[in-house]
View 1: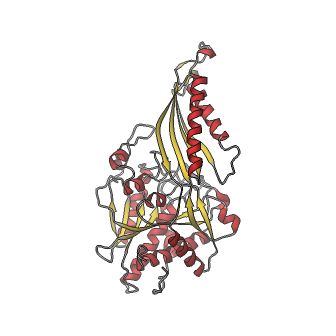
View 2: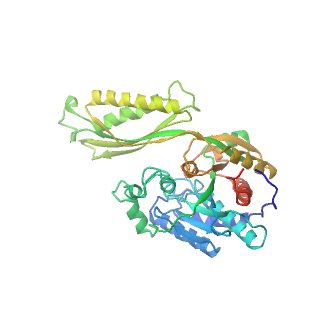
View 3: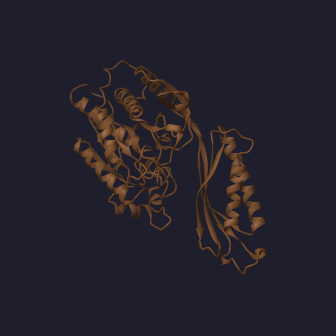
Length: 422
């Protein structure tokens, strides 16, 4: 696959860092993180500025029906596109590197390659586009990976636009309010490449510069609603209560217990979200909504955990007399990444003088959703102490630069040699 071509043009890393610093101001928190939820004012502001930057660089900007933003460099009319990017939305009080790094790095690479092609450096058979995928995090609207799942057809657009936040606002309404309920046709992809901070300790512990992801973990995700009965916490005898919070709390504890007897590289569970109603100090809770996640690289183990949570729910029903509704249930399968892409990425990184490690991704990413449609590559750079979804998330400027340089060379290879061809 590594045919000899004119070497990649250098990427303007100073431009990357300037864009990263500028776009990090939209939704910035006092502790150096981001609070930029999908469809918020801050999301609209960073989208506006991002689109303006792309247009100023001479790129065509398209916004599709779910609000995905594409910045196109089309130098071979009718040819497919190498898609490179990530997401600009964040978790509540999250980190400023997660997602945004990959989008801004993708933009910097596209700009440098566009300038090189227009200067006669090459005549690539494929085009390139940077992309900002809508609602990757799933913090305000669930499920996560929304924009990329709509793009691949896994999630119907009509259903995605009807997703509601905790205040009852739909995703369609939120996108419309910030001006990003688009109608443009998206580009046709040939391959997808995503650059992301690791949000883990493998690279830092291994003293490696670049991570090449070889496998994503699968995940079972459940939205559970525990139905009890509202009552006064004073006069109502304990034996007469149907306390939805007690029932939900039992699920939280049992989720932790599911991991007993398994290594950390086999199974991880969490309950990261709870909504209590009516949420009054002297009222027995009538309804609690939980988000339960079970992650593993083993499909057989995910199947086993699915059976076990069903047994847990039956036990909770019997003990608390509360009903449990499975409002939503999704499965993301564990799968290997594209072997040829892994080999190419590692070769390029090492040719640039950077040390590499192959690793799993436990977190979900848009490129994982895209792999249902096209080959995908996921590159990682180190995260300080493995911290993610946290305002203190950090990757040094030098480490960010290395990732941009590898991304630049990898995308150059793909646009010059269609990776789908033998």
